[in-house]
Length: 159
Image (cartoon, rainbow, N blue to C red):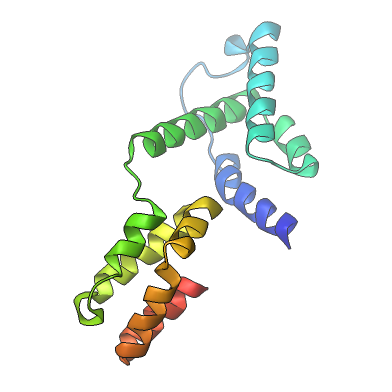
């Protein structure tokens, strides 16, 4: 279900934080955050969870995390968001055009790249890819290149 998928995503990004312990000297109570710092961080975490549609049950767990873990989570999210912003993404239309060649011109490496790209993008990318006849073009490649490696890679894309 959608809820279990969301929880799995949250778990994969948050759970590694639970196993990490700070080994820095002086990271104990003397560096405890002020009430203002804690309030500000909790507001940022709450906004982030709203932005990425985290279910309430998971929100409660995140909010109960220690200050340092919440701070690390927020920093990791910001770093990842910055990387995504700086990375040029090809549109669904561009990928559809890559498949608008002779089927023999599309090699297994291009299909592997597309497998990663389609799973890393949102529904808008997929909608554009389909609207630009990308799905039809992939089916044509599958039909005109009856090779086990090509079949397996295209099947992986559809999963």
